[in-house]
Length: 393
Image (tube, rainbow, N blue to C red):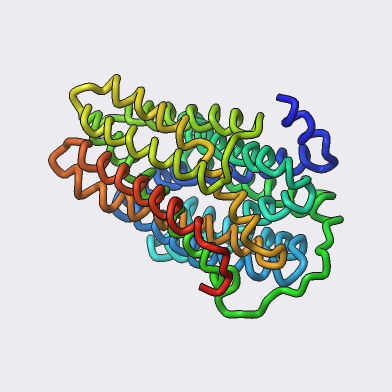
């Protein structure tokens, strides 16, 4: 773990990581706590609609928030967005506690999604500025492990809160956690003292999307998270809709955390795109094997979920490394914002497609679809990233 000791010895790294953790925990807590709070008052259909409104508003506004942070002072953007986000949280909570009409809650959920501070993109955009190039894979692996761990533990924390207090109160504590993390990032010395190298920000309409390789990478990310959406639905189908589906998700997340930490602990052979080919091709084979096992061999399917987590764990790290390499500093926050937005889009498409494929109650169709998504990513990585670099096509 020498690389991690070296990383954490860099001034500001530990404090920045500690600041981003509560914000990410709250993000993973929100879905469950808001779903329960809204369903108790308005029913499941309306609760699902509210979550969709939040997710769509967050995804659409994400790149615009990132571009603003690139073109202005990121710290000021974070502070003002945190203030706006606090107002949106206050509106949502007031509506929930007062049992306001569903339309009012939907507006509040949309405002909440639109005002999410760009904490993740800002932090990921900072790593290349404060960490030496040779240590960047370790920094991104550490970031990815924190992210996965947060999304593993967040729903557990939310579930515990829901057992101890009314659902709107759990939503309120989730908001306090989120705003605390965003504020800690905004006032962190690393962000306050960070200065760009004077490189002017390009003013083109497409921003980082003008780079053809960035567009290809984002497309690969969509297919990667499409697979995760399929796996979420396949897990539910495999256990006939019972809550034990969370075991599959936890097994996969645990494998991903272990793999992310292991990846950052040493140097691996091959360029990032070559490693992506190997990881995605292997992931496709593992998921195809899970599809063959189907619902008849649940223990084997759970084991293959774990193996898939181990295989796919370093992928997020490699994606971040490539985004950092392919985008100039003046567009980096927006590029990472696009990553976050398209991850949500890919996940949503995956759950929608998989929902139709498991209509017969069998998970195999969704697992095969996930395998196809991984195979497509491997194919793109194998062919597209071997071409000479061209920023215009």
